[in-house]
Image: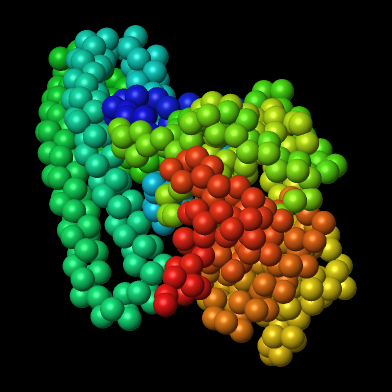
Length: 596
């Protein structure tokens, strides 16, 4: 269950993750900050300062035409150097910022991918894939917005305050004190309104993520939408989420506009005061013309920069709101995690033991117990069928073996090794899993078959396809093994997809095999081809076969009948039929043996 964060806590956690990746490129970040400061100091304050000296020199006494370069030559050279180095700092700023964003985007993408790919199946079952993709994209983009926001409005404002105090403080201290008080008021109002708007931005980002999730869900299930004529219904749902986005964005817009109006009024007051000082400064206080020029230029500059702070805060608000969703995901505890000292699983024979297993899952705040004190021993090389009514725990047992979920009590051993003390990757690389729903990538058939063994040769891929009864249909395709299967394999039939998945398992050549309803959705001819392929696949391997269709397991070495998380019956097909228990009843229903 996701943690619940307040806006400020989420913002702190977002900054924590951003700092983690920024410090890997600290040299670039420091160079960016220094170049930004250098650019601002030289061009924004160096030029007006030299110009004020020129104005004061002109005001002091007239300069003859033939004396211009003698008198003003040093000022001209100073202005030239200031602009050369200022422009160089500007280009260095562009380079370091761009380079930093490229490097950090890579790190953030990797961070998000690792977090999502290493989360449990329970985590993914409770979330839209489209929403997670949207949150990842926004999280990466938000970093750039935050860095640019800090680098452009905020650093220049800090420079302005410092240089105004340094340069104008000794000359017009009363003016600097009044200006600083007004700027503090300006900053305080902006910050207080920023905190209010931050929550509105998170709400707006959440509404946008829900919209993305609804769109992804509709597109992923477009066949169901069309075949049931539910386009209008889906459009209604989409419109509902879309209107929520509009409502949230509108509230954010009004709050941002209110902040802008208030801070703009403060800026008008500041400019009014500086106008009075400039108009009467020479008459009342004997301020030199050059200093008056600096006062106006610096004050106008800092006032504009404070206006940019409004825009910067608005961008920061939006950025932190956009990043909030993925920040919560990154803070989500991993329900299935490797032990700190986990080693690799080594399987020599393939014996499996479930010892005193206790497992429950939580949906909302409701716990549902599946297993309590469950024991099952599967010798190496044995082919075992798991049957029983829906909800008996068959598929759950296979997911616990694969550590797609973790048990709360007991141990699961493979060749005497506790799988909780082994890395998840090493465990799953020893188990070939063939699910009911064939999982194919939007890649070529060859890539899909070689997924469990990426270094496989084309001859090995072809042989695996032959053993899986897939070679014939693959070779008839226009592009053969180079045929791209489409998203989730939509370009292939159900039987074809299943045979490609079986070929993948063939090529992976794992010592343990798990088949979860691998033939339940196939037509008779496809089932025959798949059954033949599965028989080859199970040969010499410890195999667990989950099936509702009992003909799938009748020829196996042993059948375990589960009922409410317990073993109701255990034995070969003939023995269970002879016992006349639950398995015999199920067999009779499926074969029609109970009919007169």
